[in-house]
Image (tube, rainbow, N blue to C red; front, side, top):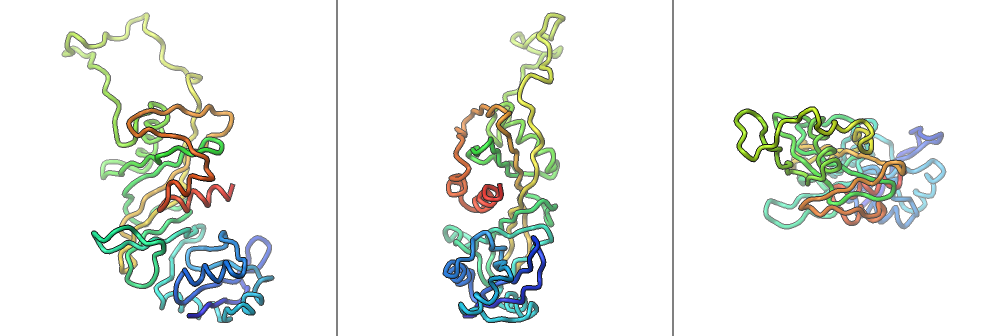
Length: 284
């Protein structure tokens, strides 16, 4: 069991940084970090970012100084390397049990383990998108349950995103359902059909009919990987942030949605979205 740290060569935020890893498990790495007071926000998927000022303290605490090349080789050999692209941050990795054998484990560790990774990311998915999740935040409250919709071959992430926003906020229709269609008013309509709109019909809702909702923005990805480390599916996570000038939208439907404080939402939602919600909350 070895904790390793590379030289503080990596510039960011006006300082230089080292990477701290374990060649055994994330549990060992987290325990070491807690013991030496490294903040949780310093964890980046498979390592902790440590400022140059803390480098020697890590070594005094038991970390072995190594080159960056040796550090990466140790991560890969242990099966603990978590790949990401520039601008992404791996927030959590949850091991998937063999099919039919219970709940996911707290940490996805080691080689040959299927897992789910949660990333903070604005980049396109590298595999087929399976689902879209929508985090709806009004000031300091988050809507639960978190709406989710599948992306079919005939659809697109953009279309599904628009439908989620419209369905959950505008019409109050629970995710995955469709509003009852309006009665047919065409020439073959039955006796109970609604009449065509005449000259005295109510005008269409104008631009001031309701709150103006901006587009949802992508904030994360949830990827499922095989035991061989191949990305099998990816979910896209969107955020619709409503400020204090926008009335909190009313919702309805069989899902019984409710608004909960954002600071509690991560614990309530759990994996795989909880780590992303927590990261977004503390990032401000």
